[in-house]
Image (cartoon, rainbow, N blue to C red; front, side, top):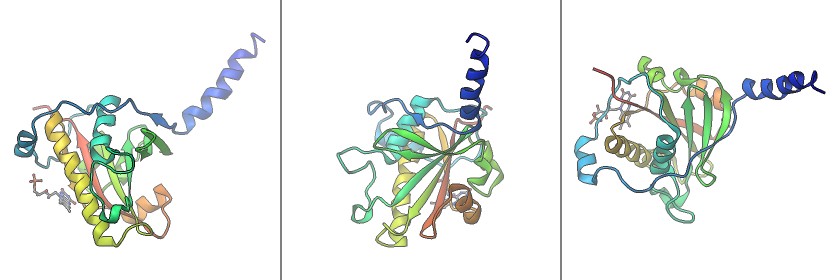
Amino acid sequence: MKTLLPLILALTVIPSLASAQDLRLPAPQKTGGKPLMQALAERKSTRQYANRDLDQQTLANLLWAAYGFNREDKRTVPSSQNRQEIDLYVFLKSGVYLYDAKANTLIAKASGDHRKTAGTQEYVATAPLNLVYVANLDKASNRDAACIDCGFIGQNVYLFCASENLVTVLRAGLDKKALSELLKLNANQEALYNQCVGYPPVP
Ligand SMILES: Cc1cc2nc3c(=O)[nH]c(=O)nc-3n(C[C@H](O)[C@H](O)[C@H](O)COP(=O)(O)O)c2cc1C
């Protein structure tokens, strides 16, 4: 049995390294941060990022601020006819995940670093976190409403970043075909926007 142990361990560990794992996030912290007026005063777009990853608590807080549930079936953002048609994909160095806000979990969709597929500008791949907002047009009341709903999510991310001394930019420049292939989207799902998030560049 002792001699078989390394082999058994290898067989159980290797598949888990080869594929991305779902990631249960810490409970989001819903207090603190800068006063709203100060966050508004500091909100801005930034396209340079320090080479530093977000810790899991900050990621959980950011995702809840962006698109979490603040009531039984409603979220931190409004949504046209409460259709909640936006899916939020999370691109990290370790993989690509779908944010499941109810379960507070990142559901693994692809392993490895796909940040450069998240957007078309060079700086995109240098941000430790990229969010991609995907509309399910079967659910949406119409495409314009889906774009507006993304705007609310994007602004929540801007304000959270201003409050937490993170930096961000919302972007429309996407390779929709590449994203559709990577995320295995169906014909009625469309990647609408990308938002880069990170720490400010070190001067
Ligand atoms: C719908 C939308 C699309 C945008 N697309 C891009 C983009 O593709 N690339 C980019 O670098 N910035 C993009 N931006 C960011 C704007 O350029 C930025 O908000 C604007 O220059 C004002 O700067 P501020 O956010 O610092 O106030 C976009 C902003 C919005 C609202």
